[in-house]
Image: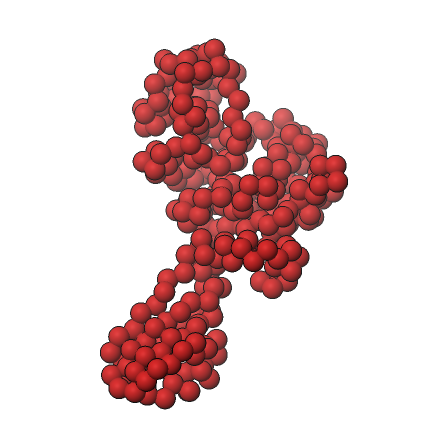
Length: 309
């Protein structure tokens, strides 16, 4: 079983002085999966990634990365893992080419320079320019290249498309999908909803150091309440629709009704077949709306966690 797991944490806790960053994170990521770690700045995403690499030590809990304990054998973990930090620090006086050449030499014969050049071309990065003269977005491209060029078993990416324009974001998505097709596990943190929807097989929503929901993006949208607007061919009595499990009649005015639906639509669709309907529209629910539901109410994370499970 463990050989199929890329990342597992149990009861992960970490505080910075009196401030708790992680308050019991339980997480399992399968090998070959693209997993999105979703949350706003300060939710604990970066702290989790740094614990996975033993860059910082948790106060409590257990961690396994590719079957290894990073606190016991951090070198073995890092040799199979690429990391793109959220705050990327590069040697400013080197050119991008010199820096990447240096990193390639550290890897020995495991990296082909032609692959580095190919990545630079796809990301439209001029390798000859000094890093100190690069924009934030172009510095981010250097970080993406150094993460991908070793073709790692596990990619840990903290806000991978920060500073990139939309076209370059799409190209990075293509590169990450290709890495996964080649067998890599991709674990990335983000506060960009569209990024998670575009890439992730599964997603965890982190709030105040606690995972409050974990599912596929599609499953998360099924958890949300949606609205269905129905126009009937004639005035009807919709009392029966309110008896359908998960359905609430929000408003009704003769030939029009707005229904609030929680969960699957199947039972409602079958019930509507008995009515003379001229038009039916559904308000689509996005992952962004779900995310805002978890963060916008201002509830403590413990209360949110109880409500969604």
